Length: 264
Image 1 (cartoon, one colour):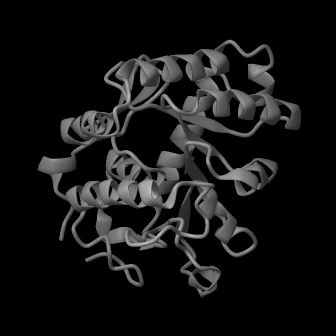
Image 2: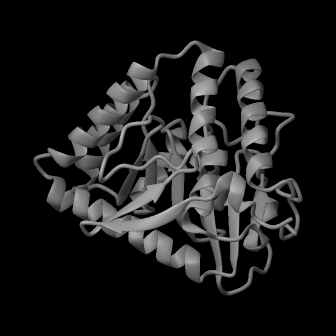
């Protein structure tokens, strides 16, 4: 099935030399549905998003760390260019097994990891970036040590965590960042491409870039069990969240569940 432009059409635009990812209304609207389902406050998401953006933009060592608005946009542009030029993109989810990645990949294959799933990739494949709301624990710490770019997502429940991470990363010399959020607010240097979990937000990123899903392979995207690369979590609630992921991925591409081959 081809990428449904009507359901999930997102584009990249240039405004005042800043790249903007313009989300499809349905992909953002589902974030309101998620908040209503879990009883989360919109204001908390806004507060976290604004706080993360300000923390990076006003960091005293932001230029050295590569965290200024301009540097984050350069990181995003590099990621976007690589994605557009690749003929094969693999999204690695929390249920990935190490053997899934130990195969002969074509030369122009690109890998994006969902949070802690980057741990399955180390010393097996080169990861372009990690989509994360910072639950990835030691695997995310290792990604920072390896200078893998992070697409860091702010929401109402991770303000303490991103503040802690920025402090720790600054002490390590930083790592390239892109910032995302899940609100209706418009920030020139922070993006909402829609979606909810790290796994489906990785797919939403590809939609935002305009990558056809015929080029995309999903590995480790289970909806019936919690994967080994998930952070510490309540398994019942996690399974509920995975059902939201499934709903979002079905919007984007109904053939996503073909884990072992390219989506058709």
